[in-house]
Amino acid sequence: MDNLITKLKILAEGAKYDVSCSSSGVERKNKGKIGSSRSFGICHTWSSDGRCISLLKVLMSNNCIYDCTYCINRVSNDIKRASFSPEEIAKLTFEFYRRNYIEGLFLSSAVEKNPDYTSENICKALEILRFKYGFSGYIHVKGIPNTSKDLMNKLGFLADRLSINIELPSEKSLKLLAPQKKTKTLLLPMRDLNNKIMENRDERSRYKKAKKFLPAGQTTQMIVGASQDSDYQLLKTSQILYDKFSLKRVFYSAYIPVVENSLLPAVNTKPPLKREHRLYQADWLLRFYNFRADELLSEEIRNFDLEFDPKINWAFNNIGQFPKEINKVSYDELLRIPGIGPKSAGRIVKERKFFPLNYDNLKRIGVVLKRAKYFITCSGKYYGGIDISPELIKYKLGEMENSRQISFF
Image (cartoon, one colour):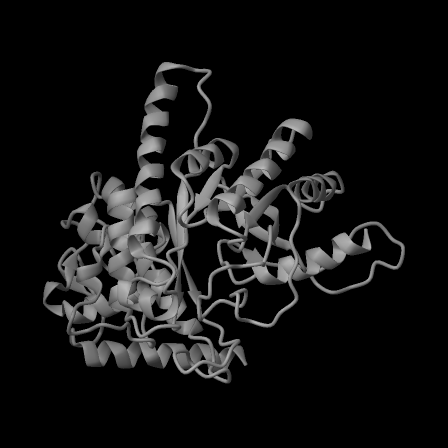
């Protein structure tokens, strides 16, 4: 048991840099009482209905044959190494579930020996968990690059979601920091999995007893700040992945400097967390607001302004399109107004069929007026109180933010 706990500490620590879910837990001894608050190994994700699901987040192994410069588990790094057997992973997950620590599993791995060997071990672990222990909970698996198509398909029937992390958005960056990885070997499995998901969806529509293949879809992750890639390059890559492979989600991970290397930021450099946050906001605009990457950034403007969110910055760069009349513009145009989201846009379209909306109606509907008022008119009337100028609006919004921080403290 002590050996298993030691492995868990090492392999949960190695898994924490994958941001598909958020780490949780605290270091607090239970002193013989019921429950565990160990900080290693447990993370959270959210279901489509908003429920928070606790997952065991762990590596199968950190014995990696690859030497990716940015990775803590690379072969040239001097760290403690460990590997779980398939039986150990399955038993550990099931015992955690029985004790109500977790509801599911997030399983990743370094590339041990070769991609197929690693993926075969992951498949064995999931088969034991699914068929021996009868576990039907949520399982998210990280796909191993260069794994055979048959093994990938096998994983797709065992797991609920699969992620193939491309890590870096350009061939140039991969060649520099992860020379054993190629863009083609990362994108081909994504294409194959997407095709298989579509085939399975059609099969299930015709045969009720057909097995589900990746019912929660596929995702990927990109590292922010390890390479010289711009926000535009990262977002453009995300747009391509959404368009071509119908990914459920692209995750962005601010690079945490943990090793000294001339190709990487210095160890004492702070992680670009604000930049990561802006990319998540922009990604939301791609998925839910019908924006395109080329609208938010360009070859001339390659990185986001960290002071204001991407939607307001888009409005500043396209100020000639404002103000928009709230009672006339289409649903898609409403989505482009700062302070208006999909729900409030839908309510506006629904209610203005019966009567013209005024400023007070918008507050009731849920529009964030402290932002929206500078970009709209209601029945021809403008409520911004200043000229529609990016400089003046930036000043007013910054003034409100400073006032909020002062009152908070």
